[in-house]
Image 1 (spheres, one colour):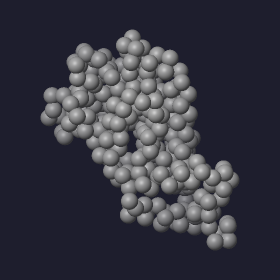
Image 2 (cartoon, rainbow, N blue to C red; image 1 turned 120 degrees about the vertical axis):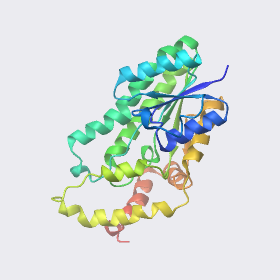
Image 3 (cartoon, rainbow, N blue to C red; image 1 turned 135 degrees about the vertical axis):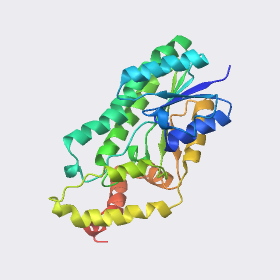
Image 4 (cartoon, rainbow, N blue to C red; image 1 turned 30 degrees about the horizontal axis):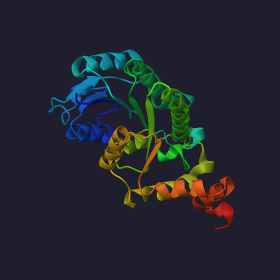
Length: 278
């Protein structure tokens, strides 16, 4: 029987690239999104089932899983991909925006995971793959809320992996660096700004100049991430974390090979050179 993957946030970026890649590898794909009626690129394959699901509406997720299982017989992999990145100075991010970031990136992911577990436990097999971010391991300025949500998912996933091993269910974490997708268009649109916080003006300008150069760096593509997700889904190992991106790996290597304070000092030297007399 062909294997089946259930994907949240499949309308663009990593979710769409993964849907297309898994179909090319002979899988069935349950591609979920909030507005499937608007999706054109994924609608042409009989092996892709487009369904409506919002991770903040658990009933819609359960309905999609039930429909997908009825169509394909089972779900073998859950890809928790839906999410977005809140950016901006912490003081400029409203409490409402903070809660929304966690509702989508953390609580929505948790409830989607909870929804699939009875099916996986019944079958005594299954793989949960959570998309986090380089910001879930190494942080930078202006993403404090986004990084907090991804650190939460990292901790949740690691602890959950121990629990679910007892049920023969694997948990995997995908950690992309900078990926050119519509993800960043939404991040720009949702950027938190408060003109009254003038004390940060110079710092924000410096950081915006720095981050604008990221697009010219050697980075991974959505296709690269999709291929790594396929590896995680099929390599039959107990590997937990998969890092994608030549921009991210050196930062993680620095964090892993240095003392905590040496790492922090190196990062401050990059993002706050004036404070270190550089």
